[in-house]
Amino acid sequence: MRTPPIVSRQEWQAAWEELLVKEKELTRAKDAMAAARRRMPWTEVDRDYRFDGPDGPVDLLGLFDGRRQLIVYRAFLEPGVHGWPDHACVGCSMVADQVAHLAHLNARDTTLVFASRAPQPDIARVKARMGWMMPWYTILDDFDTDFGVAEYHGTNAFIRDGDRVFRTYFVNNRGDEAMGGTWSYLDITALGRQETWEDSPEDYPQTPPYEWWHWHDDYPARQPSA
Image (cartoon, rainbow, N blue to C red):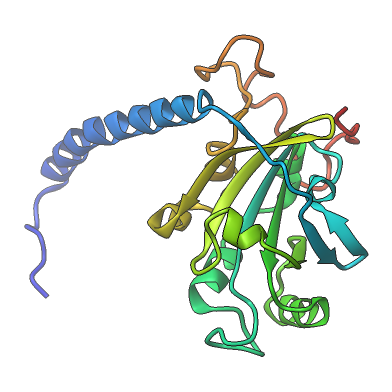
């Protein structure tokens, strides 16, 4: 293994500060990209998609669990996938392993779910084996085909206005590699992190940063969105 140069502490500090300038440029570029996502047009979902869940059948609106935003990761856990019946596919399992505590997303009026074609008993069994806690539903119709995730994984973002549901964004391929953290999920949603420093359209919900942050077992009780 050919290593980089070995330098003094002072030279290392100078090299780090030089690279930090580029890292800050990248951070600002990511913020600008998230701001552009919040200005993406929406497209209405005009089909009644059906899923099976641990509590029985549910439609797409039901996946929101009363919240305003929904993120759906299409995971490959089903017959024919490498690892079946003991595992989901390796890549989807790595994504699942990275998911942060959902209380933080929920506090921003956002629900995250996984969806596959495996029956619920198999999903429950694999979740228990792997220690996964996210809601995980069975796809019963053409949801995966209609939203670009029939053959490969992908993450779709939705928002609702009452009973109307809109698709707002989609990431797949290497875009899914960044998913798992609270901030990465919020940055692909229509409303973003909902903090006052963000460049968002007028009248978007925003609160000061840090103020809404809580320990995951100490968030205030949530009132369902209208």
